[in-house]
Length: 570
Image 1: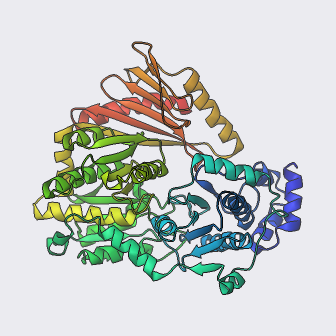
Image 2 (image 1 turned 180 degrees about the vertical axis):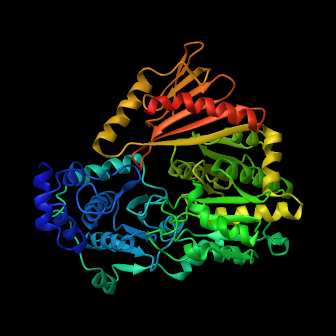
């Protein structure tokens, strides 16, 4: 069917949600609006669904959610006997509605559902899957996207986001379904009464807290350290768990950003609730200028990522995800070594777009470093590989540049509850030594060198934008640049064709990671440029690394790299 035919079908059938019916009526004479909503199905990628909330096949709504869930249910019933699924959701618009819609489909397909009774963070979903021995999980969230978005992440029985194989099978099953005629559903309250749907108990939440607390190294120092914190959950799920964990380790001088304390999917004071960007932290920074804390913490709506700011003269400096991750790795390694708690043959994991300073830190402490594709599920997968060999305790830390961290194997996704605790503990420890986090960062760069990394996103909206992104990636792949910012490209990696080429010698070798649409350009002197399309947003992301002896020269080089490489995205 074409877009107009699909529109008519939806007008006739999408009657369960009055918001959708009203939207469909409003766009009756708007051909462009109809086309945008129906020109494609909302893509079910390796992580699930993510898109703008609204009517149509290219939107997040109860029908696209139910269709995806039917595909997931068919997969689970094919792969397992008597499967069960855990469900959680964040503060976004219709997150609770979508989570209940998913539960109704699963229950109608004979699948037992365990659902949190209130919004809970992504790591709590991963934990519940493993703790309750489920075969799958669903987290309703769009992470840090603007308020108009929502999403739906699918998890496997290992607590990681679904594997590439699983995602492909689920997608095939979804594609075979008619959105209105092939989806089984039931009534939530009736299934709850029958016991086919049940609420996840406080015992599971308490077990999660205990596992997070077990990751502490110097938590005994926190209560007497005098650490002062401002915290914002950015109107998301972190409010209760982060505050509870900080209280339990003795961090009691915590000021909450009131405007961003309670759940609110409209995110009225931070249109982009992303701790990576300064705009999301502006209200918190105003508090900092009044309260004068040692640290500002900000967790994103589903509380799997955390950003920080620290005092810098009369103002506050934001740290990047690379800097926080590297500082945590250095802290964990140094303290576990000092206390004699470092495991034999320790392992740290990072994504290929994450700072290369990790290699130097790992070398200093005898830690094996593993590089994986972008996406925290690949870090979780490495923990699973270790667990399968009975070596899970070898894993000490994993992180990605986009502010996601995890220090233990109790969950298989990034955890801002764990990270918030460790960041506060680290700050408290250094405070007792008379060292600020700003000084700790400088000490790290003096020790290992300056790796200055930046991320740029180029947005391409709509159908034409998708085509433009494909064209850009094809051009860079087929005719890669020979130099960037005046530096020669000495090595080129194409993760889609699995080919690594040494430009100097002409020698080619195989990349053994799974295929992915990622290109990497290694430059003389140790600098680097990596480019990939986002898996969740209509963006191409570029990661630039300028390796120089000091910050000033690194920033100058990065500027040249940016100006030159950005020409590819015009």
